[in-house]
Image (cartoon, rainbow, N blue to C red; front, side, top):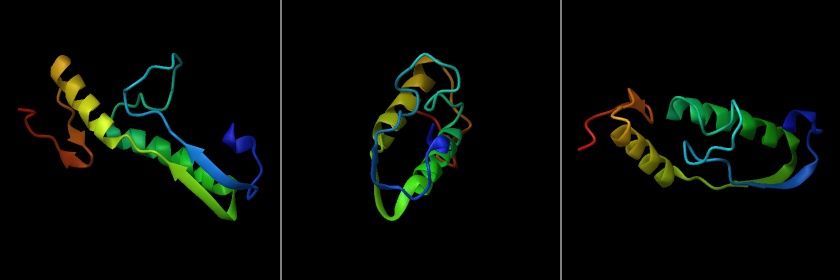
Length: 97
């Protein structure tokens, strides 16, 4: 939807994007259900680039970040599913305990 909006028109953009694997909104390709944190961040950046495009040059953008929630959720998923992601936030993962 953002791609259909004109450029440089909004003064303020405020968002609380979906956190990584916290909620399921029930549709394929939803933000927050990527295979890795890196892919999740890439997806957020694609959205944020479009937000930036729609903002007036003097506009303001604010976004919440659920990094603690994200870290806790990834750890919980790894323990409950007995899976340790290969990379986590750009670093090699180590033992959870």
